[in-house]
Length: 276
Image 1 (cartoon, rainbow, N blue to C red):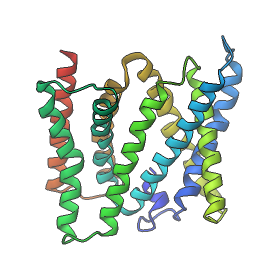
Image 2: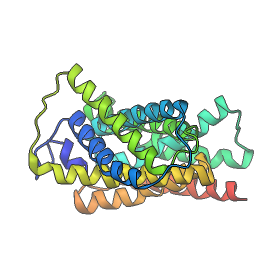
Image 3: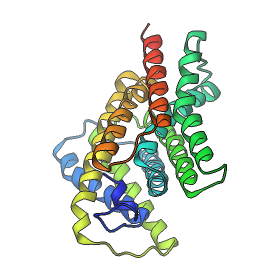
């Protein structure tokens, strides 16, 4: 649903600057969850260290969403859905580098399949189609991959938030992200103007797409761990590709089908190996 908002080539909605888009989405999410958190009584006061972690989480999450929005402005929603799986690759790599969580031999092939289908094949095919030039479309692909890397960092940051209630996590994260975006808008002199007709859809995408996903994402990280949460979360790729084809009428070529198929097989095999 965000594609028509940021891309001037998609008809129907006047394009809005990505910084303004992310600011409104995070602010709407924070305002929505503020009264909810007040209705819930905290068992223990939140530590200052937890507040600091949540603020960092909010800034990182906003940076990830910004990178995704800038990337989505240039590339297709179909590509963005597939490339977003790059966060799985980065999660595994960071786990190996920082936490010495090395892959077992039986997990290497599924990981290679995910890396090939989520990053190498989509970007490689776009570079080939644009005659090996660094086009705006390829730039959009790279921004989506950067978004996946930052989102991967958010996963590890969320684990250190302590026993803060999930709704409070979403509230502080959203308001911190909104404040960061507002500061960036002042720094880069982004016009503080928006078509009021776009507010409802931006608010909905923010509350449901950001607030709702973070709410369940944090709950899942605490219950089943970061890696398994990322693997299950990646199932949204199929829905993203189907939605892009039906709603945005984007073409699905052989490279897209191949990437989606390779990623799906890799995810299935990796989940199976982890569950074994």
